[in-house]
Image 1 (tube, rainbow, N blue to C red):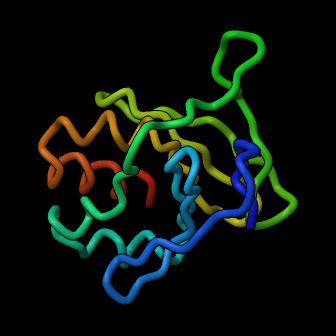
Image 2: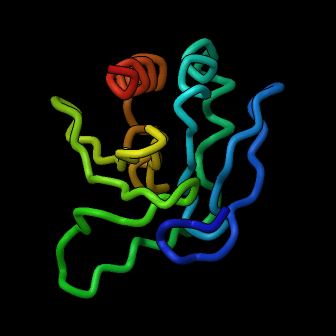
Length: 128
């Protein structure tokens, strides 16, 4: 699979026995719909392994605005930009395979907040 932000191929990120797809450049992660429930069961310390390391590559945006859609790395579908409230967290959701893309910057942004509550809230809302 390729990064929907155009940074090349996604690599593996292991979270215990679960293997996720992560972009080594931007730190974004791809979650198949079936993986969400398994990620939810992890504790905060384990979830920290998903955080991007090193400097980040911000998504390219030639028009100065966040893109509303990007291509799905899993299928031929389109990822639509979504926003969770009250955290104002942005993620992308595929209208075809129901996978989710979280940009590395969004992951970094919520790290400064209590991880357990933010990740639990994030992934629970993504399941809905």
